[in-house]
Length: 138
Image 1 (cartoon, rainbow, N blue to C red):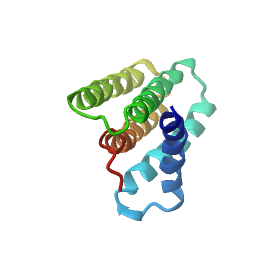
Image 2 (image 1 turned 90 degrees about the vertical axis):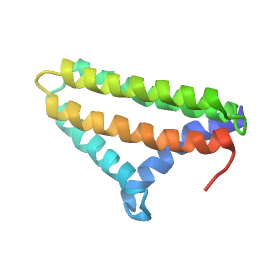
Image 3 (image 1 turned 45 degrees about the horizontal axis):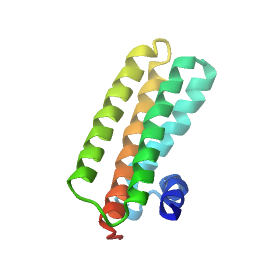
């Protein structure tokens, strides 16, 4: 339980810390930095023309957090089920991102930026979840 709670709060902290030092960990940290930048710009543009439909981009964020929490519960017990869960979450994230871009007429630029954030946040989250499932940390 402690590992799951720790990871739920650690992943966003690690992700957004890459914005302060984009090349702090080499090319590996540029992806979260780009995603965090897209989130900031997407939120600014989205707040200029608010649409309730933009809240669809909360779903991929929470989906990634659920995957990270599950990896914390099953720390060191990864296997085929862990890979399957990651693949299903990736498919859902991509589908939700495409759907979000499609349904957000009038704010497509903001939706595209939030979509980039959703996918990069997922990639970062699955990276941490994979380390947790295998209990092999960098």
